[in-house]
Length: 362
Image (cartoon, rainbow, N blue to C red; front, side):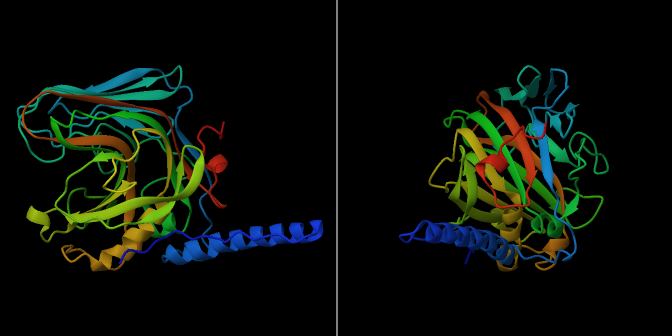
């Protein structure tokens, strides 16, 4: 059974006097504060040291102050060009593109408004197959555009790799404002626009080698997987409102037909797999709670051959934001998306629309 990480606080009804009303408001506020910091840590309990201070601050990835305009463009087999931002980098990633594919992927930074245009433009796809490409905005280990020992620019507020315990013991959110224009479903069998986080047991990290865990958070999605999803919910910022939202969760092991493997992926689908998520808007996600739920789920994943205990000591190596696709055949495929703002928050209080907005740090 999947734990529901949300909690609700009943609304108090006032009495006849002003003093009583004020008193009840104070009580409600105290209950809310205690509820957030008691119920959430219970759900998210990990082995972080009790004396460890929480990470604090806002990390603005977009807009990136003072960064010159420019694009990075990649073609299959020609490496992963990158463009550094103040925090993070743009990476034109052609990961796992089928042989015989022609065309390019790219990301362009607009210094006038701080937005990034991302595009996939395949004039010919080599053939049907698995998931591929993923041009991305990356933060942390620069595995594709560098190596396991090179890093994107990072903020003094928070740097990766970091243990799962330290992330879950904090209150880490990611907020992005975007507009996503998916590929034609007659050409693309599936696609997702997502956070894509990589976690490894050791440093330096060995990606796509076990034990290796991937956690994807799909904002917009059209995905057909040979696995079952289960309903899940958590507080989420959606267009200026923080409320409990549905996020179906499923997992699969990287082996034929979801067979046993030391490589494991968890997928969180915004608004559930019966929905396609949100094509455009602002969404903020509690990444600490996502990793907390992964830790709770891991012991029940029978196909996973890695350790079911000790996930709190795995390392979160990257927080990536991008899109991937899989295709029916060899036809041309084109689509694009734009981020107008993107930030990470390390909160010390209950989340609110004001505290999760981007661009407040100056």
